Length: 428
Image (cartoon, rainbow, N blue to C red):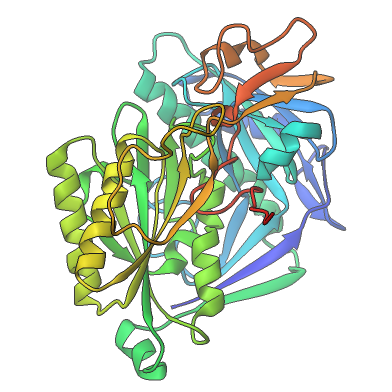
């Protein structure tokens, strides 16, 4: 399977009377976009704005972030199974408005939504302070239940990204990245002496607004599933959850999954990258046992020498993470874990809710409980007072002068467990 990603580098966004890209500037017809989104009768009103890197702008409460794209060759246009009919993605050519993002905002659906600061202390913690953000603030009609509210906003963000992404259809990309990988037997024959490595990606699938979708299927209803890495890079996986903002894997991060990109970089050099196992996270012991057993079975059938396991969320999913680790290690499959920690304001509490002696290789992406103080913004897109009810915030977190104090829990992407974030380690 061969996928070409054509990056059209965006260096600014502005509003105009039509939507197009010229000389790296994305111009958006916000009236046309708003009218397009309001074709969904569940949407009462839409407010569209721009937030640029370095501006003293705060966006809150953020629901999802999506990269604008358009499929120019091959199947799998849009978000297959969600905004378009189900069709195979991960092949052909997709043009990306690289450096731009659609950010959905709106009335609180679930308390685990977040904040993006485009400048200062807050910008240090979120990767989306570096993107040129087109914000879509959505008001839904009265009377929607919470799940329908979430679905309405989620679809609006995806549709907005498709609308804007069309601007890149006939633009010559600044660079073209190629991701190509054949069948497992073909790749193993090419690299017989390289260790075979699988990526195990855990997904929030716990209901109660904690869902992830693959080709439009709610992943809480699936068994662990093998995917070609190109599929995730090309829009097969979307976020549909209100899990804690710090480690929510937004749709943008699925489209640019750091673990997949790093493994691709080493494929054929240091490792033979076999593919991705998408693993649902369940709330029941039965579900956890079933998913971890099935993950091990797939890894063994594929002959994996090692697996890299990334988590989404913390607390309850820690048990899933450690079950997979223990079973793989006992079966002789070397296992590396990627997780954040909930270690308290002082960092001295137990980082994970579970542990096993087999967890000997663990990458930490930071402490979700770390408290940051964010200075007053010149402009707030959304509702700053919502911090009082967001995970990582509290009543009184917003000061009279506009200063905001919160845990990293509330900052979108700050401790991303697929590594798409700004946190690094430092040796002393």
